Amino acid sequence: MNPIPDHLAWGLDVLFVGFNPSPRSGETGHHYANPRNRFWTILHRAGLTPRLYRAEEDGELLKLGYGFTNIVARPTPTAADITAAEYAEGRKLLRRKIETHRPQTVCFVGKGVYEVYSGRRGVEWGFQDEPVVEGVRDFVAPSSSGLVRMKLEEIVSIYAQLPGSKMGSESPQGLWAECPEG
Image 1 (cartoon, rainbow, N blue to C red):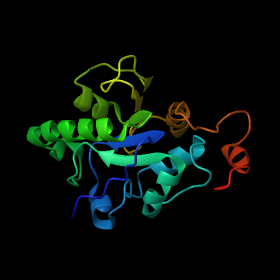
Image 2: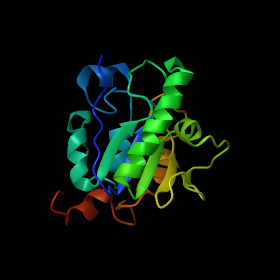
Image 3: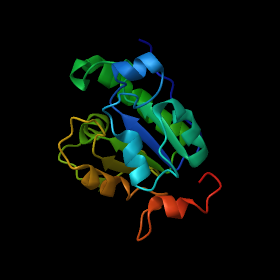
Image 4: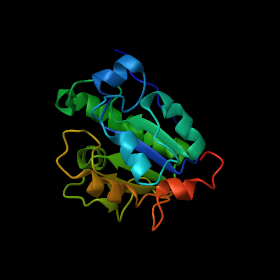
């Protein structure tokens, strides 16, 4: 299994950051490729994408202003398999990526991801008061793993707070219908 490529560009609306790729992502070369991972469903239901994307289309989301990276590039079955040295190096690399690419918002996919990166504990969902990188907003969202016990609707409501969400009184699909990608 190989590390999967980052999808980065300068000034993204949202950069999504995970712990590290799953073995399935390592096999396919795409982010959030485990069929039990609900990431793509969450994005769509939160009104962040005009349609339901598949993991194989992860690079296409750059056109929507979304990018992807991980704290650690090495695929593992669980985050518990990541070493302290990998986390230490990953934190430095991630900060460099954020400083270089200057996304408007960094969405940490899981509280643990943000806690490892920031060194802060007991954080709440949503935007954080003090960003790690000045001028870049930090947003903490639930993990999209199928192992997470939160209800999907609750997770979706948190992701819907991200910039670019078309959620509202209308369905996300209806709001996206006016967009060229929809």
